Length: 294
Image 1 (cartoon, rainbow, N blue to C red):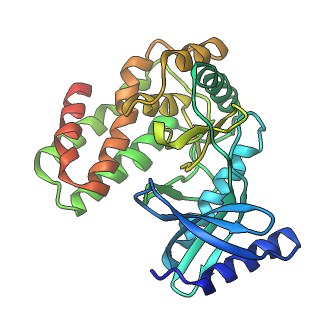
Image 2 (image 1 turned 180 degrees about the vertical axis):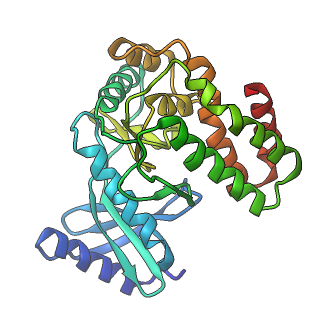
């Protein structure tokens, strides 16, 4: 993927078309931290923009991300970068977002994030899933609408990742354990019926920050409507959230007593996805997690 001045000229034109004005590029600077896309700050005469780049075939991923950000913005309870435009130029696809000036997280911002996330989860839908498929990392995430949450999660999350793992060569023990879990997965919901809540979908510690005015910001979503516990579970998988965050969340919307068991089921989805994205280093963790659930 070649990043050329012509690319930035075209991106600036698309920004200008979206905003109804002319945009003049000053320069662009690479931003580190991502493993799926290349990221840049695009400096323009009157403003800066955050731009993600990938191969042209990834345009659908960027379109779904832009729609997901808009979905998260609609309730108006938590700050989300505003999507500006997306498209392709030659062999490159791009997504342009509002450039946010970030500050430092502290206990107050963490507590506010917990309250706001609970409020976001109170945005509900008639069905689980979403109007379109999107991606979790760079993996396809199926969001076919369904009114039955245990079936939705079993088919669109666990079964999908296990099938992908088989295609990637992870057979044997993982598939046997996975099949055993799928036969009994609905037992985790025998006395629990969640509401279809608006979820970020990929809420680990690297996907939130604090704006320089102290307001929490969430980004890089894998949006769908699901059990709110799935978002909370992922916050525990890799860390990055303190006790004030969880206490504030529970104060707004207490958790069901069965969450402690179900969170491992929800996090299995992400561990399997990491296995499929990054390789066998996650195989032992996936198998161990399934054994614990069984």
